Length: 306
Length: 277
Image (tube, rainbow over the protein chains, first blue to last red):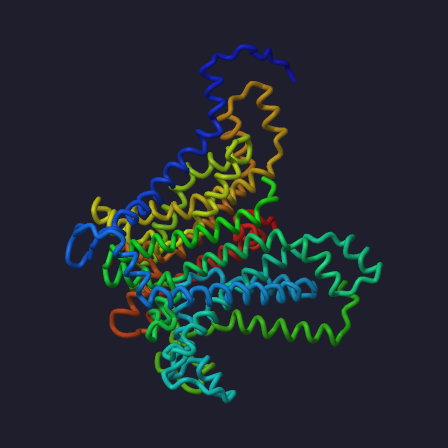
């Protein structure tokens, strides 16, 4: 290779460019994204202090201080939807993780046909949540839905209003649809994590007489921890923000029995057109979400290597 | 390991597997059947498993989705547009974050990740008002633009993981030969990372294709995408289930095909490159 004399004193303009280059390459995406998210946040912050119903006025009507926030915090819908969201999010994430891990261990037996099963298994996750909503709405139908029919055939007492029409089962119905869609997501990702466990390590432990239980918790689990940390928070937040499934399945009803924070926002902003109140709710949600994500990232990603 | 598995154990595992597949794949097949079955059997009790699908229905579902054709085209325009617009922003960013030392690298990466977890519904109302005010409401551009909040962070993460895998030696050699950074990036690294670019674009496409939140408030009758189409069928004349099912099948097919074709990369795509799979 020919050696090229390296200029010891590069023109200063070029040197500055090279120093800033890494940032210049990142800048366009950051600037575009900042613009796209700053606008809604500022818009919501400003309007959360105004009375504004889009049905009666095209512009904000008057400054009301913290009245919108007070109204949101005093409305029973906000707290019941916060509770519903937490129930849905925590139980959904836990169920999907647990079932997914069980399936991952099943796939990891590597019997014949497992790779085909794995490729097909992910299909529910590829479907748009709105479509998943319709899939389950069809199956939950009180007259002739296949889930209703199956449940009745095995002698379960179903609510007369239908699975989606009863305050006792509406949230559960949404949970089941979500578990159906996202359990495969956990299963195939955790399965990939299990495959990354070095075989030599497992063999060595087995020779030392380690039981399957010890093998799993002491060797396999630490290997999938890193993976699990990422997908748990991702799914937790997606579930926390769910509104499309709710929109198709129950519209938050009956009453407020299956209303989530996401759906409450949808209701306030895009059905009631109460922009002031929706803006206040937006900021409350943004604060809650940031607190959860921030805390999680701080603790889970501390030892992360970049 | 296979040889150790006793027959009984194997039987139990396969039984569990069959049950699992029935649970996860059964509902999809059941819904596809809804699209092609005679409407009278849609809600029959007990459920009708065997029926003669009308040739007409199969034709409508698979070949010519009729009223859905326009919505399928809209979905395609929006998703393709979102992926294409994202490339000039995310490719340089992914390259920089993979190759250079940035003081705030960790912060920037986590910021992108945070965007992927932002509640979409919180942005809908402001975007709706903004796009109406600047006259972009109902246009493809409004949806393509707003989708960048998801597509760019996703692509940067996934693409960075692919660029990380390209050995630096070639770049070093070119640098010694006096090639400037843009020649190195465009002529050496990007061609090597082409498979990664394709995989990233494919999964970004699915991401955009399946998004219903933004079109829900930004699309018009003329630019409605498939998921919005199913909602419209649902809202208009009561529930027209065969219409919903055909639109839904058309909406389901492209993501499923992409996931099957890029099977090897599915884990990576779903975790934004964080898990190599």
